[in-house]
Length: 213
Image (cartoon, rainbow, N blue to C red):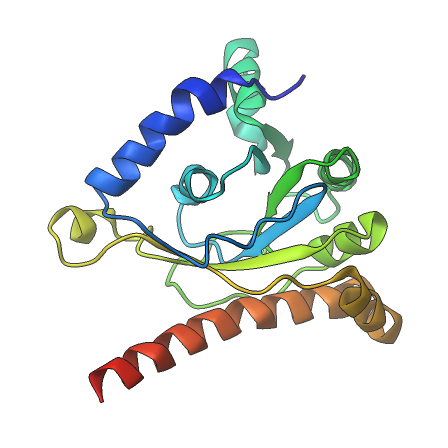
């Protein structure tokens, strides 16, 4: 089932408005969006993450969602129209979800992947799983790392104590990833991608410190 173009025409403007007005979302380095197949990889801190990343990206995106959201025919139809496809988090091998992600990227689509495999309960980065490295190797697509902040505490944002922020890093080229893959396979590639995600957060903190000086 294909993602609906109506999501971009009707739903996306609503989400963007909510993000800006209610959560004062800030998008940093929004200009780095190549055409064609693309993997967007970042930290995962909340169930709010996918729609707000989608709001920050100026093109249609697809993303994995837990299989329980596809249980009924109506809900499954709706999730597919949003661009979601199911992943069974209880399974150690999700070949179906991985193959779907590869298929979409090879079709020239943008797919959101969380290298940690699941959301962090305390905001601390979890170890990388091999999935994103496997997808990157199979597709030869560039990876755009991002770092999320604030989505795990929307109440603070509504009280003006914080804000939602999506910060994009520099594109990781297929050549870089293939060199890493030759050294240690998909797992090593995934760890490299997650390190780039962490670097975004480190550089953001350094930038704030320089502003205070």
